[in-house]
Length: 142
Image (tube, rainbow, N blue to C red; front, side, top):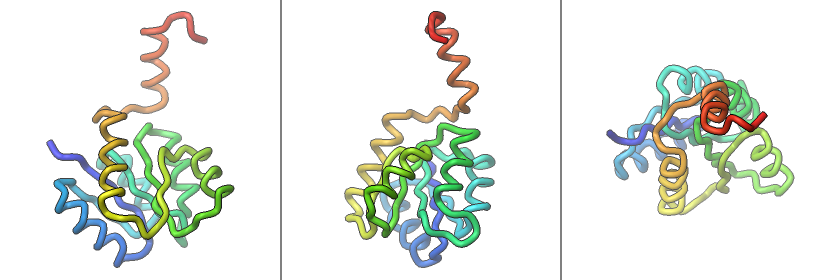
């Protein structure tokens, strides 16, 4: 079973380019040019990892990240042209797992995506599932 990547970026050229690149590396790719639709696709399609831009008109990447994080532990890699350390810290605090600055060499992007998937496995868990598992396996935790 191949890894399913959800690409959320308002630039159609970027989503098409990323889709072609990721498919050549064996990924299944779902794309959208809307933050709102991206949240919905994250719920419905259960991707293994999300690749998310920050600057989008309908729902920015911070809000998309926070919304996805409210119902899923889906690994989220931010791919943005913005490169301000405070902004990077802000989006990581919002729940993103990784951050890369555009343009990024394709080999680096692929390596980061594979690392996120490898680290998290293929389980699709919600925060409630994680809490339940922790209580069963570590009964002394609060």
